[in-house]
Image (cartoon, rainbow, N blue to C red; front, side):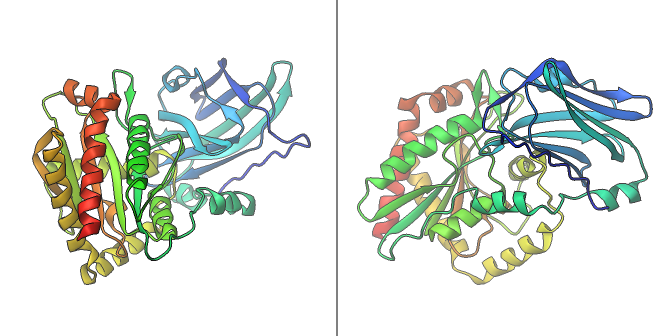
Length: 383
């Protein structure tokens, strides 16, 4: 059996929002086992499966709200080493549990109680070989249908319209960096909306967002949205955070087939870790990415992306956007790997830096970046 799938279908549906009761919920070791117990306000449809490399347990829920539930309050570390929760797609949320050793799901039960409903998942140790054989997202036409319609793919614009796809990084179960209450996923969505509004004001230019709210969109999903929109240019928005606040200023990344420097390597790891956090199965992505990189080497979009990066950095300098000492960088970022349109990734600043964080958290601060991107796209389309 490749994976364990559990879907509980209710006659009344799952339209109402279901709350999690932290007092009835825990993720902790039992006797030679790992036990996940969740107290819910009602029965809901759900599914459970494991993924490999790294090993993790995934639980999907329809209609469950995690407001006020802190992952660290649920987790008693042991066989489970880390826990993440958050929205996955409209109407669905996800819990991802990192596993310290190979564990297989041996029992799953959701039962009605006086308090609402209790979900119990029991995992026991297995060999690495057995774990690998069991791991994988379960085939399920209902879930696959949801994946097909979410995210919503836009209709391509007419040929005489220049389409810029704005990609606010992270979202949903992958919040990105966070400092002093400022979350990367939130502030990049605000910036993306402001950039899109400004670009829509340019004659002959249309902006498309890869997400419009706090939803998770996989890396491949972001590129699929761009292709469906007929993207002429792709701009991904991010804001890093380090342990210290010395690093500051914006930088612009383009795709490199080489390893890049240490900062670029960190950016790659942080950027692509979101798919792992969300429990996306990456087993089949290697060949696809390699093919895209080979296509890129034969295409014109790589040099075009680097030229646009030059234009954007110049525009940011003119708009008094604080720039990093190395404002132009390259990295092997999957979200830049499309061969059919030029793409850049903008590291808008560091949330770990007091000045950058204040800039990104304020409308007036973000307005400088919006001004720069508008000027860069205007210049680019004129060329």
